[in-house]
Length: 267
Ligand code: 0O2
Image 1 (cartoon, rainbow, N blue to C red):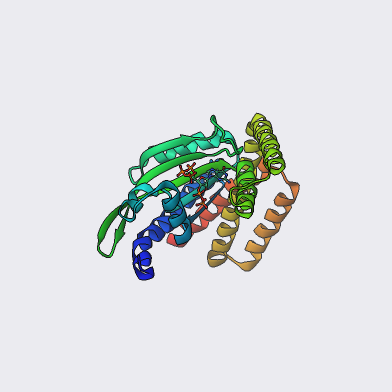
Image 2: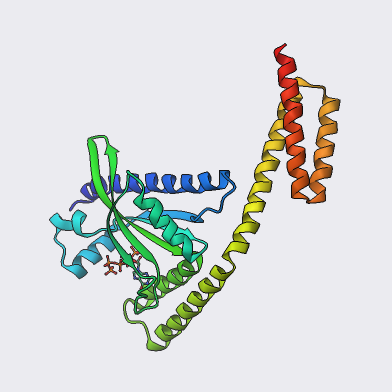
């Protein structure tokens, strides 16, 4: 295939990767704006390089005509979670969507690969609207914890270095590291509730502070600078107490004050 033709074939995959990243990032935004723990921590994606596609086709004996059908990970999305339990939640979110249709799943969590690799893979069908009409294509979602991702990234670069000929002592170390990663994930899961509570209250605090500052900014438009300064000083005093209940009370009171000014301005 000529290089220009490759570009044309790969363009919808680029679009799919861009769109999917945005959609998953919006899920994160949605959870965070509700002061809830997001099962997704980070999202990234890539279109497989031409040389990597060719290598896979060669290794698996895939013909040019069958490339788009049989190379399922031309578009790849990596979804990183904090906890192993979050992976199931993400898979559930994907299953509930009407814009992503699951073709197959590979569970390398319960069935770790020989290398030590752990992750949950989902192949989806996803339709992009191109200049020439809709195109249904496949994308691979790799869903894993931050710890699993750390291991996979390091191991992937070693695979690249040794090109399939990993010295046994390195492979052994990697298996041991994978066991340690697994233990770390289990340990983190055991304190998941506590960690989530701490994260939620920090998210709640930052959302409340944002709303208070927005409210103070709006008050500038309807009342005197002296009055706003007084409110701002009071906010800084309340903030310094580091008392969440106090901050929430201040937020409610400020809402009432702002509403009062709003009603006054309508008269
Ligand atoms: P890249 O560079 O990520 O695109 P396979 O024969 O494994 O290539 P299959 O059956 O399609 O083909 O795939 P599988 O097992 O679901 O793996 C697909 C992708 O998972 C790989 O893509 C890797 O990204 C990742 N993966 C699978 N096994 C391992 C592993 O042992 N270590 C690491 N670090 N990653 C793994 P590619 O095509 O290898 O590469």
